Image 1 (cartoon, helix red, strand yellow):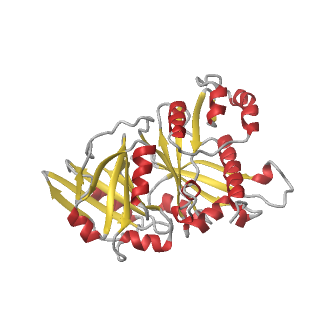
Image 2 (cartoon, rainbow, N blue to C red):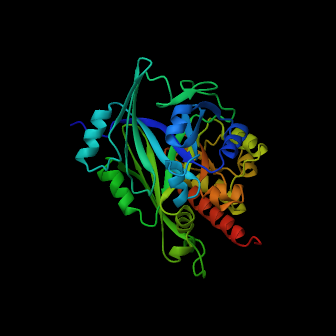
Image 3 (tube, rainbow, N blue to C red):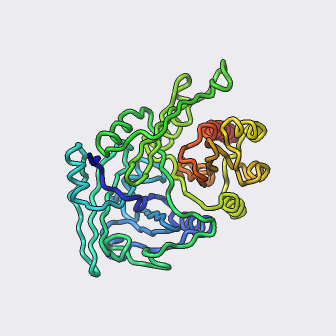
Length: 385
């Protein structure tokens, strides 16, 4: 029996709203080696009331928008949130089938479908509301459509290309969101999008330092679409110290639920992190004990084939996890508000990940990330005003 599914084939793009588009250009082009591939044409810019530029690396596309009028979508978003992800786009095989699937399951459509024919091609899309606050999901069907989206014009290498990236960024591995309670989000992924459970953990700093007067914890569930491999992780805080959790802090800083980070897949994480660090990209550090324990932990996990030198992983603060000779390597950037020392830059950050056969998310790495973020937030709170 064939399983009914949403019909998505992968990620199309994500739409990020900022107050300083020149700073974003500097970040993506000079630090991350993304190439400008498209931008909103003059007619679309005037009509939408926002300036938009699209940057690309491999299959990744990020559309950066900033308001030029107070009545535009970007301005409305920034009145309620700091800089952050406003929408996520997904390619679908057949938009009619996707719409029928969503209607049957109670999806909330934000407007009628869009259909544009241009240059011998067709662009069709529709947006739905989500439990992630003001984050919308857009489903896109393209048939020989030449532009990134209607009203955009190609620039630089052009949107149809797969811009080479000096750090080996090829695609989006997964997307992670935070909320104070995850069950409405997980139920929506399951009941509306038809996603299935993939991975789950629960962790609290009390697990490693019981009896403390403070601490924080989280529960995380990953849902996925088996047809496309698209994965979404969702985090919620745990008691005790629910309101001290880094997840609670994200929700407060973000003005509600939202996308916490996006993971970029790379081909050589050692080279990527080395060169990104040289470009001024700041990553979270890990406790020294993590690397002292690493050989024994890898042995217990049955991982004997790590090609990378462990001392190099420690030098670059890269994390390792997996099982049975399948492993993955990952590292997390500092959140934007810390990078720019500006609250309005938002709590969003990027992850860099390289997989060597392991499809999971790394429980041991999750703990190390948790401790690192908590330590960074403590240092930030103690910074002189």
